[in-house]
Amino acid sequence: MKATITEFKWTNPHVYILFDAPNPTGSTDQWSCESINPGMLSKQGWSRRTLNAGDKVTIIGFPAKSGSKVMLLEKLILADGKELAPTLLD
Image 1 (cartoon, one colour):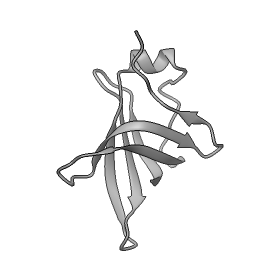
Image 2: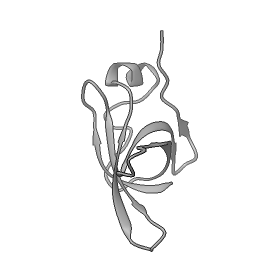
Image 3: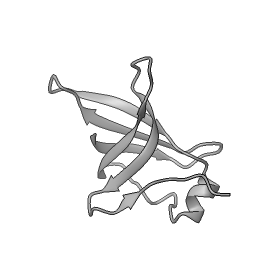
Image 4: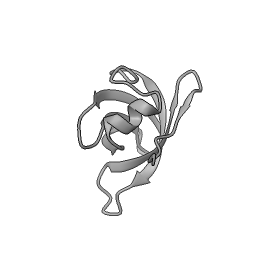
C-alpha cells in the first residue's frame, strides 16, 4: 500500500510505523504497523532516522483479521526504491 509516514516510534519491545494511506473511497485511513525490536533492526541497517514524518513509502504487511487498521510489517520500500525487510536474526 502506498503510504505517507506520520510517525516512526523507535521503541521496545517493537518498533511502530504510523502512516496515512488512501482507501478505495478516495479518503485517507490512519494505520499502525508493527515490526521487530530496535536492536534487531539496528543490526539490519535501520536507525531511528530511517523514516521521518512526510516520507512517501510503500508498505507491505499482514493486516489484522479484525479489519482494524493495524498490520505486521513484511517489507517497506523507500521512495528511492530501497527495500527494507525486517527479519528475525539468530
